Length: 102
Image (cartoon, rainbow, N blue to C red; front, top):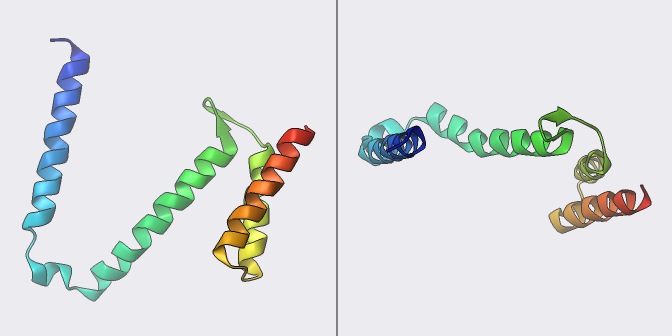
């Protein structure tokens, strides 16, 4: 058994233990309002980090390209309180137009 398989099995065991522990937490701990506020913000932070990494990096190099224009148009649409489908479509069209133009 090589190091890759040991790491894969070890990671799987750790993931199982974390999931099992999450289901074993008493309900009164989960009812804490501060914990619920933090829990609501975690997906936003993770999605923002994913968008930033996908927008500004390519193959471990920092770069600026058509994706930045798409994200910028999406932010502008959100500031103008556009509906979500309009935000996504306008960002995709802007990014695609600049990609094809370059």
